[in-house]
Image 1 (cartoon, rainbow over the protein chains, first blue to last red):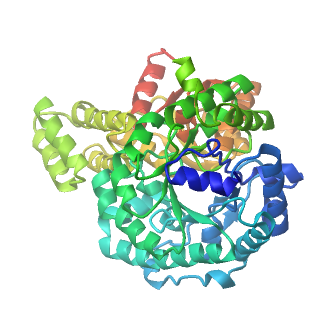
Image 2 (image 1 turned 120 degrees about the vertical axis):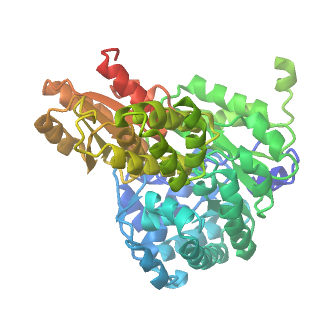
Image 3 (image 1 turned 30 degrees about the horizontal axis):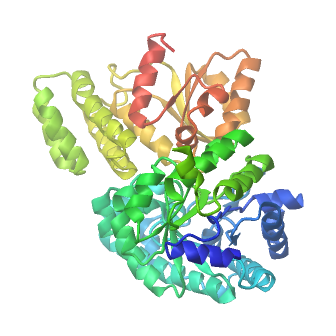
Length: 347
Length: 210
């Protein structure tokens, strides 16, 4: 089986040849090439080389064309602040006053240079991997993007106190998100990962989610012309699993703070579970600990398909050593090959 | 006072500022302002903090209820009030990070609990060392969201030690929640899982327990 067949099989809740492993690398490509993070993302050819080298090194089951979250605010004219050892951050919010929301215009995604780098990298990667490996494109959900557009505190206040302006902002962001996702699919992405951390139960209560992020997701995912995965970027999502299954998404990423077995049972037959290795702790794991964590995850969620092993945040931190990542990959091959007979033997 | 706690908590959870203010005003005849803060506002915020730690309360509710309490407490206990707790000499900062919500929440909740503290905004390690020394801080609350920023606390502690600064560092933010050993690794005195846990940590520091 190739990687795409492996992922498609697990998405149909069947067991493939082994549990698929999606190592979601954005920054590590720069490390592979010996480039600064800023120089790496300035050059689509470098991102292509980085992704291909990482896949050759760790044999995982996806290509990940995520550059950095604030690329979307860059598209709106916002500032990106680079770091030497972490993901780029967004600078000062560009929505400074509530009235600014009324004058926002959706950027033309195909004519926006920073997004163009992603399309170029995606197309080059598609030419290399063809239909053997899924290429995962990324969008920030319309409901979560305002954290960078206007600041988290002001956005929470907007949600609770300014329903008309909130609805207007969602309308604009939904148009942007759908166009951005569809352009990535046209460039060669196989699926879109819809990052929606504000919808997680860590950030807003379920009742509010059902009135806001849920409706936004249903409308937006319906406009995206390809399969989608919903990622809460480490946030909790067990309380809203049933609603998430109704948004049209196929995959859900669960937090390291949630029990994988409970999540798998809650998603059975409805959603494929992605997760949930702890990327923060991973930095200090030994090789033996990495193997034990992989075994634990496989034991909880591997049987029957419907599961992809990954980290829980959507990005392996820069500080995670290569030997730990290699140990995760090797443990997945060793213990994740179906059927998982060792589970019965160890009982 | 205890009979007012549940309705006050419900008003906060419903984000009903008017009702919360009415409940607080009902009690002002019988209690001093600082008693109201300590016996009504702080227990309510602690209950909300416990809910956050257990996963039954979301961050947006913690933020909005903290903001309401800060506004209400400012009415009954203005910044200049002598009852305000000005000890320990402390400040809160976002360290080399660009995510301010956590700091905003802790700042609101501490002020709503009667504490006064300086808000340093965002600073680098070098800026923070200079400011901490100049202000003679006893306690520095460091809020971060990103892992590299969390790891920078180690350099901050090393600089403090190099200069002989006894300032205690208390950390908070997602990396410390996802890796429970991280606060010790970077040399912090303690960590707060939630904003209201910061009150408990500060109290323990003042009592010499940390």
